[in-house]
Length: 569
Image (cartoon, rainbow, N blue to C red; front, side, top):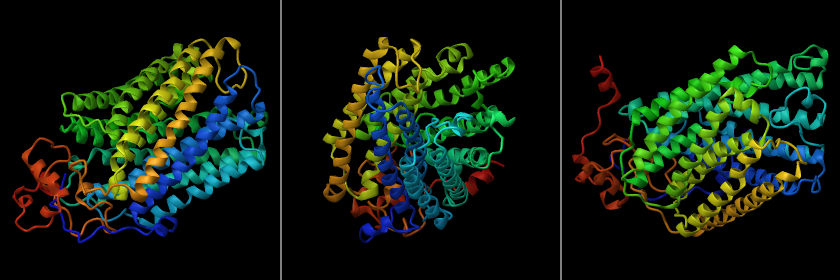
């Protein structure tokens, strides 16, 4: 979906102070999300390295056992709530969605800013809990364990999750209203970029599932601080009820973390393969299917919690069924790349690695969906491997692909491709060296969340630790590349990748109001190979922008959604 390019006299540069202010510009807020969440990613990564250093040897000889519990609890909390979710939904969602649908901003700009500004103080609050002893009951915080360990740290953890959940609800509401009500008149739902479909499905999950987690946190806080017994078995409470409430959010949270990444990959692969996306409607509707099915699979995390056999059967089948819409996406991406004219830039490398790594995570996911196998590997390192192949091999590889792809649009500067590929190789090798052996460790029976283990697991654990060190080092080329390029990298044109979605018709970086005039759709977002695409991708050439007799005026606009509605009946 592309517009007739509008003329902008000059590129507007946002003052650096704007990024530290209560800005209501969706582009500034998107970059605020991305930078803030990346800082927390670095902090969470440090905690991960401390965990892996402890696990390099079978003995507990690096940090005390209690500290080890605190480290893996805070690592998971930071990576999920302060890195992946904010960067994908808040960062890329804020920057891209209004541009992709032709809007000038989000539907509720002030609410958008409030949603972001809940995150930095909440993250700081969680980090300050290290001074009083942070939460140490794992990121699941199951009672009764969470009610008897580090009471002050647990209270801070509960407050932090509630605040971060509130931010997520605000963002979900904003995205849904923006996508459904602020698209340009000529853009129907079936003409939207696939990233917008992914954000719509994600936002629905945020609005439905997050309030349940918030309720669970409130009740757990009462048990902890007031002495009630909602979940405390010593007072007649039921900890299994907490598990149901927690997983009703926390399994959909996996899709909140992966659906936007699916959307990013659906945008990146066609551009760098120079081919139309294969199965547009199948990919779009599969996002909605994943969103719905994601709400009815939560109890597969509870197969060992006394779940009745008939209920186990339902959740096992539902979990296996959700692999179908996910598989549709994977086959569509492979078909898109197949036979294309591949531009193996950093964004494309991370994008294709995303597909392969997520397939491994998906295959192990189907395995743990089976009740007998899940009982065998429950609470082992097989589950740790599965989780990280989905969330790091999936979400984080997707984030990196998105950063390399849209960095020119966000900053007006090009990243260095050589160092981008160095970053990719180190990340790919370090990630697989770290997490692939964990499948074997889990199948052999090594439990997770322990600091000491049987010496027979020592060799593979040392391999995992070495891989984690390579993964940590891989971040340095990206950091240096991003900072150096942002400050003085080569200037980016309006459309360096020759993309067809609306954001590429604006200057790099886009002006405050995004578009001087309302965009008019002339071609589909993935119609590479059509003659009109050659005209539209030439929008990167200023000589064609805004000229009354330019070739762009010979391209007929796509039918409006009102016209499509009339044709449909």
